[in-house]
Amino acid sequence: MHGKSQKLGEILCEEGIIQQRQLDEVLALQQTDNRRLGELLLDRGFIDEPRLTESLSRLHQIPYIQLSQQRIDPEVIKLVPFELLQAHRVVPISVEDQRLMVATNNPLDVNALQDIQIKSGYSVYPVMASARDIEHTLQEYFDAVQTGKSMKAASSAVVVDDASVINYVDSIIRRAVKERASDIHFEPQRDVMRVRFRIDGYLYEKESISRELQRNCISRIKIISGLDVAETRRPQDGRCHFKVGNEEYDLRISTLPNINGENMVVRILSTAFANRSFGDLGMTPEQIKDIEQLLTRPYGLILLTGPTGAGKTTTLYSMLNQLNQVDRSIVTVEDPVEYELPGINQTATNLHIGYDFAKAIRHILRHDPDIIMIGEIRDKETAEIAIRAALTGHLVLSTMHTNSAVGAVTRLLEMDIEPFLISSALAGVISQRLVRRLCPRCKTTEPGCPEAQQKIREYIPDAKSFVLAKPQGCESCSGTGFQDRVGVYEILKMDEDIRYLIIKTAGESEIVDMAKTKKMKPLAVSGMEKVVAQTTEFHETIRNVLLDG
Image (cartoon, rainbow, N blue to C red; front, side):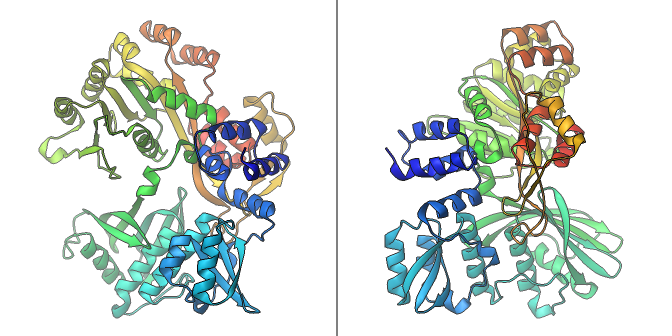
């Protein structure tokens, strides 16, 4: 058996980080998957990376550090060629008593430590750091070398001269990537231009740019995205690629005339988001199993529902990655194409020439597809063609704007789709929301107020005594108390009883009651389970799941 894996598993179970059934599941998986236990636990979503790294440090009796809180001497990191640091994923930190401290995520990689020792000329001793921390630090170092900037972020109010505009704008984009921002807002005010980052769904003010420089900054972004620099009266849309370290990002730029100048929003898209596993998205093992079963169907319609910004597209791309095999033809029609997926044929709608979803699907059906992904079903015509495709041997994936999984059935009926067609074509519906994940490094715990305790037991009656977590804020999460977002899911699986209720046009509540007897877990229950598991906080779930649902 995997001796070290077994010891790590025992530590994680003893500390209550994972459950015994989760360990058993992953140990069984290791019989056919040669990856390390920690990788499999991360992939399944049973543990987050900081907790895993801390547990590994205790297992190997090696100190654990947070690189974001370390002062790294630039002269020390230069002791080893960057290519070697990148190859071995290690970061030199400091030299004391002729010994070089090196951060690594794999202290058992003797070859890596020997290479560092030979190149640096110092004896090496390792400390543990998370793989994500190491990756970010190496990217920061690489960017600092390229731009000549320090590894620390610039102050929140910066004024630069014209000669520095290019580097300054680039540094804002790099900072946004480092802080995991999804969007950068450049907003001209009366005296300054405000720069805000949207991080985990919330906007945070980061910079103030002098009025004299705001036009130069906007022009710089227009140039790299192919927009007309002289046009300031009409909105424009553009895109470009931007490299940070070894990773390339797709930037989508949109401008809007403003009484104080031009408003600009830069959306940051990374292919890493399209490659996230179901566990990374926040699905439980049971939910992963349900979705994987849906994806094994040769035909049928699978819908994802939720409001704008609920993560539907990211889930769709994860499903496409799961389905993407050399013996399948997958075609998508999107508005617009958000991520480019190798091996998948992607097309974008163009309303200016009448190329909408319905027309695109008609043409796609002539290209012998096995699987079709439709960005959104907005009208009766698109719904009818999607259902027809699902009934003629194609697996069809799409999204709709409804508040619940069963709400998708009601929405299709409101579009005047015949009940028997819905019943026959629909394979399943996944409704989802996003909640912010508490920062694992700084979150604190509390018993929870009586209101929270009572509300949780409304949805989880058999919940025993539990301790809730709340945000605090540290350098790692930029003081927000949160780091990343996870999905909350509700999955409606079709069977004969549900199909019968649809055919007789039963009400939503009747279908929901039937689905609950089939073990469908409502969004509210899934959300409260994440509160009890200390993944998120109580008020975050109330705001984004209960009130929104």
